Image (tube, rainbow, N blue to C red; front, side, top):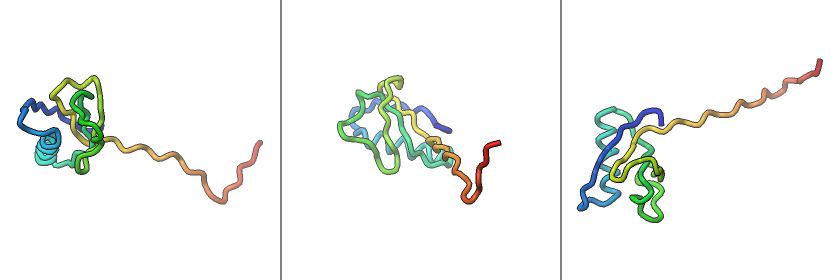
Length: 91
C-alpha cells in the first residue's frame, strides 16, 4: 500500500464488516484519502468475504489479530506498450 494506518478493534459486539467500515471511515476523514484495501489476520476473515464496500480485504498472517492495516493500495504500473507503426531494424 502507498498510504496506510493501523487500526485496532477487539470489540466482540461489532461485526467484522462494522470494524472495517469504522476503520475506513476514520481513515477517510483523517487523511482525506479513500481507503481501498485492508489487511487482516486470516483467523479474523469471515468465510467468503473478499470485499466490504469499496475496500478489498486481504488475509495477511503478519497482521496481529484484532488489527486492521487499512489504506490506499498501490496502483499496478502499466506495462509499456509497443509503438504502433514503427519498424524495428536489426543493425
